[in-house]
Length: 314
Image (cartoon, rainbow, N blue to C red; front, side):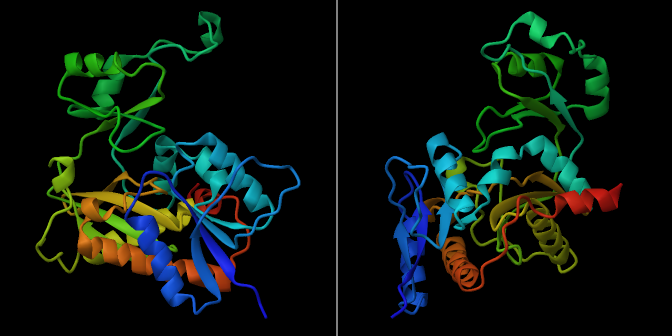
């Protein structure tokens, strides 16, 4: 009798999405594939792993988990999303990836640290030149968003309408790696779930609203000309990045979707946040995609397709 294959979920404080996904996997797995929370303690260098696939929802906050996942991948476990590339990506580099697949992004500048990182001295930065701020402001033009290159959840994000506000924000960024980005004056804004690099769910989103009200309830229909553009850009970005679970935020200005935030490999999937309809879609489609990956494993990939896309774009 063939033993059952396990899809493990590695998660933290989430309560709605992981358990609903486990139930959906069990209901559709035909007794051959089951969902379960990952269980781990210390990690032995000769250790084997009992999971066919692990869904990672927490390793960006727990470095020990990231090493665990890379070790599991080295032993043949499929990981959603790839812990090797996820450890290396950042939101500034994401703009370069976006350009390689023909997706528009706001004008962006990467900034030096405001404060020296730990264990560095002034002489650690002898290669660094002073920033010509007038040149930066002329390129970006106000208003400007200042945001971390590594991060998410709208933490340490500032909107600046003038020079004084910019420097007041920059002064609060400690030793984070920050980028400055032109603000897109958008007419519409969408947050798009992507699953398995082939399924897309478009959600009308209002980033200016209080956090609990950002997913628009009962949104108007999407214009017929716009929907295929949104789907194309969301899939192109996730395929380039190699993410099998992602959210892509697209702001519409003058009929052009601009990718604002699209490196989200552990996106918000809480029932109370995204709403019942969006929750049902992500649970159902993730369960189907994970079962497909277990039944037809994908060869190991170090990244998505962006290296080839960059070569073609040069």
